[in-house]
Structures are given as structure tokens and as C-alpha cells.
Image (cartoon, rainbow, N blue to C red; front, top):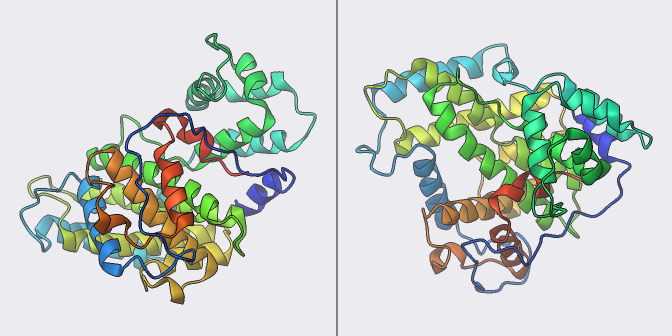
Length: 352
């Protein structure tokens, strides 16, 4: 999978799109204490742990969970996940993928002389793609002042690069339907929202760094795939009689999620630098000991969680306990994240 993604984007040669600074979205990040360098150790482990705790509680609506330790229901879920991790299968079979039309479309877009009519025909075979293409074509960034209601018109408006961005993001977006369980329906969209933000944050932070932009983008986009897989197991095992989301459970779930993400990414032939970066997130939160991609992912994760939680009222982005220690580059990244409207995330999170 990584090989054809790399081929798709190897010929673009264009910088990441600038965010629309006129877009109004709350909350607005304040000017934090300034430090000298990117991914410094000034953001403490305590800060990261606090944000991770709030994020996990928000994911499962577990702010009022009565226990710190796991209950019987959670123990059964973790035992099932342990079985998945220790099995011979990577877990990729549990990932609900988009139909095979996605690689076909990306391959067509790689050609400079692609036919709009043929693209429209392929896109029209998938209702999810139809909805996303029309939504993006009618967004603020592409709006012509008149509603766009046909796929052919939308393709003309978006152009080759716009379609590449959108289809790449849709290719990794988890599929949630009426057959999905309650935890998948609730948590998977929240995980995807954080993945999109992290992918964008990683690209912004990667500027002038010794990392491959596509690799840091993918690290942010696929880091939660293991957790998304875990939601299907939770839906299958949970008896519904005891709550899910205790701190001890969430910590164990995160560890299993990283292992599954590593296994799945390896099966999908993503570069070792991406897999190493994901694995490192659970080993050491001191950036000095991380790989280059791991450093970017560590900070991208932190900033994307801050922005998402603040947007949903789960924390105060003005709280100095959250933003102390951010460098100028990191503070600017957080500011840009806060300026993106919800409906624009598909557009800005696409790789170039």
C-alpha cells in the first residue's frame, strides 16, 4: 500500500496548502511561553499524561467512570485483545477498508491526461466518495458561489491535486455503518478526527526538519488504526453491564493499539521509520530518545489532542499547564490547527 501511495505523490512537488487565516473557529490558541527549538523536552511527561488522560476519558465518555482499575467487563475485553495481538494474524483482517475503487482512482489521477468522465464514473460507484467529493467541492476553499450538484462539475472544480488529497484521506478513513457496534459508532469518528489533525500537525512541524513529509503524514494518519480495530473487539466482548473506560483499561488499550498498528502497518508495507515512530510513543515520552519521525509524531499527537479537546470543551486551551514549554514553531502549529473549520478537515489533511 505504501509503495503505490509514494508513487502517487512523488510527482506533485508542491508545498502543503496554506490554511485560510480568515477562517473563524474557536478556540484560538494564546501565545505560550517561547522556547528555542522544535520538539524540546520543555513539554513535560506530566503535561502529556494529563492530556492523554483527558483524551481517553473523552473518547469513551468516561469522565464520571467510578473506578481507576479495570472491572470484569474490561478484563474480558483486554484478554480478547491479548489473543488478537498474540495470534499469527496482524489484525489487518479486522480493518474495514474502502472498496477497490480507491487504488484505481489514485492510479488514474497519477496520469496527467486522466479523463474526467471516466473518473466521474468510478467515483459514482461509491456513495461515500460521492458525498465527500461534493462536500469538498462546495466547501469554502473551492466555493464558486453556486451549489455544485454533479460529480463532473465537482471534478472540474477540485482538479487533480484536490482529488488526490481527498481520496487519500478517504482511503484511510474508518468505515462506520448501521452494522457497527455502539463503541465503534461513538469512538471511531473521534479517533479519526484526532488522526486527521495529527497528520496535518505532523506536516506543519516537519517543515525544515530532516524527515520525509509523506512519512510523518502517514504516521499521524495510521497511528490509531490499531485502536480502531480494537473497537470491534470491544463491541463483540462488552456485556454492557459494566462501564468501559477506566484509566487502567485505557492505558492497556493504548498499548495493544500501538502493537496492532505496528503489525498492520508492517503488513501494509509502510516504511520502518513510520512503524518505529508509532512503537516509540509507548516506550519513552522524552523526545531526546526518539527517532526523527517519532519526535514529530510525539508533538503532533500532543498538539492535535489539545486542539480537538479544546474544540469540544474538554479542556481550556488557555490553561498554561497545557501550553507551557511550546516552542514558537509548535505554538504556530497549534494556532493553525485552531483556525481550520470542521468541514475543511478532509481538504487540509490530505498529503501532497
